[in-house]
Amino acid sequence: MAKVVIIGGSGHVGTYLVPRLVDAGHHVVNVTRGHRRPYTPNAAWGRVETVLIDRDAAEHEGSFGTAIAALEADIVIDMICFTLPRAQQLVEALRGKVQHFIHCGTIWVYGHNTAVPATEDQPLNPFGEYGTQKAAIESYLLDEARRRGFPATVFRPGHIVGPGWAPLNPAGHFNTEVFSRIARGEELALPNFGLETVHHVHADDLARLIMAIIANRSTAVGEAFNAVSPQAINLRGYAEAMYRWFGHEPKLNFLPFEQWKVGQDPDEANATWEHIVRSPSHSSEKARRLLGYAPRYSSLEAVQEAVSWLVDNGKVASPQD
Image (tube, rainbow, N blue to C red; front, side):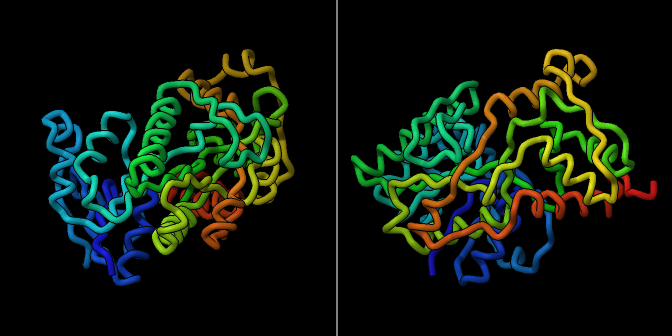
């Protein structure tokens, strides 16, 4: 089996990915800047080697890539690279020293879609610093793979969901009070007509996709894969489904965005704008065709599992409250 180094392996996806890798017999090294616990306990973490590196400081010194290369991994999975210079430093250090490099991208590289569900062969129209930087990283890595033989694969997650953290809610931001209002059967205001879309993905489905990428290395190198649930959902349909899940009939009203945002926290209104202006809706057919992978969770199933955890832990009101 392989030696797998995960940079940022204690987060949302690593919580599920690391146990899968360990159970498959791989030697797993989690590179992290602190002793953060995974969201869900698993005995497999007792067999994981932890290496503490402050990435920001090491990159500033120019030593991060060298430190990762010194771990002599067969596979490197980078979950937390957000700028092109960071990717370039790592690639130069790992060139000729790693069998497979897997990068966590984002569906925000698409910006606005020209057709939906968006497939991997459609043009990218990124805007905003995050999406633009991630698109630049992705273009660089795939070019390195196709022109110079660097063994890179990119996967593009949607809105990652799982027990232990708040999912993107039907109002397009992350305040859990939205779910509490729905749980109590109270009225919820949505921007516009609630027809803009969001596209979730369960963290364990992402872990399963990465395992499929590893298992199909020769096919996956030089490719990017969308990593989303089978279908996107619009805000109105999402809210209506959650009302009924909590045992209520939907109670919604709609306002033009500029009016809607007046009654919202400015940061939350901005988060909503960032999501609805992109209205992601993507296809994962390429991963099915090339890797034999299909997500197990629908968007609503993934969200409802996460919200159940929030209710059980007192972070969202139960219907009886």
